[in-house]
Length: 137
Length: 137
DNA sequence: TTCTTAAATTATAATCATTACATTATTGGA
DNA sequence: TCCAATAATGTAATGATTATAATTTAAGAA
Image (tube, rainbow over all chains, first blue to last red; front, side, top):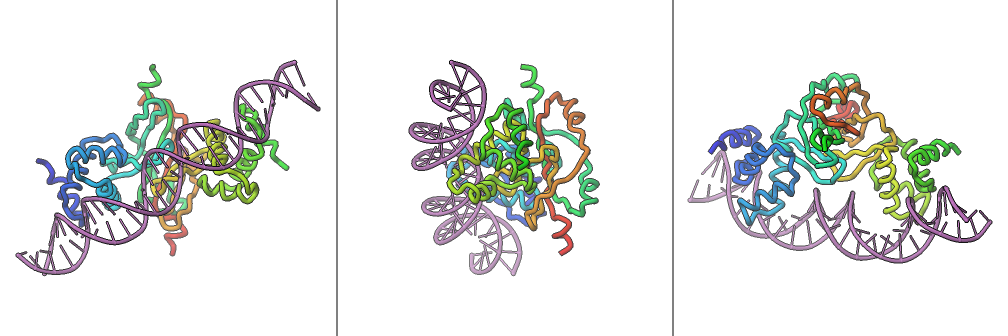
């Protein structure tokens, strides 16, 4: 049922293929809403009622470490958010409705860092304000 | 002793002038190290041994709300970091030494958001990797 | 200067995300 | 199938933050 893609990704990274990992990957791939760990846990509990929250923490941790998924935090909460998309790093957080939007940008990171001598591995651009929808209300 | 600047800022924002607020503002102004609330608290405790940690939370909260200071979170910890500088929004976090560097950039936010219809109030660009110093070791 | 009140500070308890740790179960190669 | 490494589990502990209520203080008015 289309899990081959995820199995492939795990094997490439040298990670063991487990039901929990596959299900979380599928969920994140199909729900690009930057969910928190708790949201992932709630979803997983529906499918695997006996799953431990620690398993979600562990799965997310291994997926982040192997760079299969992205993670980010926003100023308005302490929770870690995750996203299957590891290309889009620009996020707009609406202070009114809380929705998190992905944004496209052609920011040239390497250019920015070269002169400082830093080596970038990852980055997040978090923008806060009022989204288009809420601005109209 | 040079506190006029901070008194002026507080009055402009309609905030009451208190010793704690002035001291925290002065500390943040002179220490552009993006400290956590706990670090601010530890400093304040030296000067005001009986100060409550809640006071630090409250002061920081009022300074952020009135846009006198900036705040940011990074993926590697849940703690809120603050900075007196409300112009520099680009930060480089070294995964080796943990140091947080400010970066200059001419990213045109408004341009980026215009086409989406969002209204930006603030933003943080957090870049993760290995800093120049650590890369040399 | 004193009075007044809204705002700031304090202290304590509660909550919520995350980490630590020890045990059991499972994956995937030999 | 067996074994070793890795993953999942459960519980307890930690650490940041929030909630709440009582006390104190700043700053404008009398």
